[in-house]
Amino acid sequence: MKIAMWSGPRNLSTAMMYAFGNRADCEAVDEPFYAAYLAESGADHPMREACIAAQPTDPEAVVAGLKPQSKPVHYLKMMTHHMLPDFPLDWAKDCVNVHLIRHPARVIASYTNKRDSVTMEDIGYAEVARIHAALPGPVIDSADVREDPEGMLKLLCKTIGLGFDPAMLSWPQGPKEFDGAWAPHWYDAVHRSTGFAPAEGELPEITEDHGPLLEAAMPIYEALRAKRLRT
Image (cartoon, rainbow, N blue to C red; front, side, top):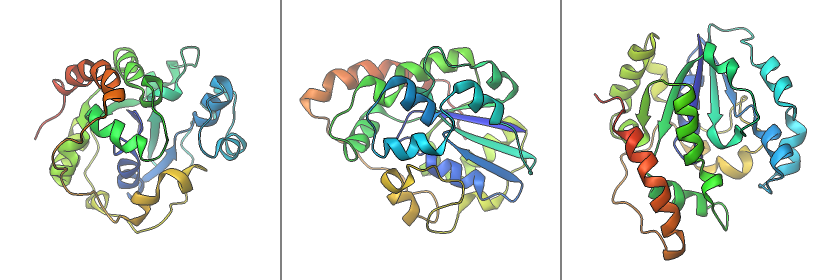
């Protein structure tokens, strides 16, 4: 089984990868199109040169490398904003496509903790909508996973036809062998974790300059949230 887990950044996506990657039957792949996205878009991301050096920059070469190596479950952590309009998507029709979402206010607040500025392109909500339309599949909200990790993972596994493994509920602290080259900048919190963080509190306040970004992202989030899996 090949699973493509689609999300924008700061969406609990790395913790979900660690959950699946902790299964004995699963091989995890971290953001395979990141270098190709950086090379074509010119985006100035942290650790840009290290990321480009670590992966193929030709999207077709990335697709050619998306093959399970040794385990029956192949889990792909996919960032929607990495899939530029001319990047191939046909390969994903052979995957079980799952769409992971998070409230835009939380995404914006988390993203600006790591970078000084944030745009709609950075957080990928328009691409979330485009890719969900092209590759329909179950939708899960990160808030639901944090509130009830076992219940939501059991439901997700049942929905996609995969047996639940309790190993998905915890993992060892520290970096993982399948982490991308960008992990030192982005993954400090999840490297300190041994499982999913508890349920989140009140929504963070968004500064006035990020108000238009929140306003633009909310309809996309709400439309997908209405379709989410619920225990």
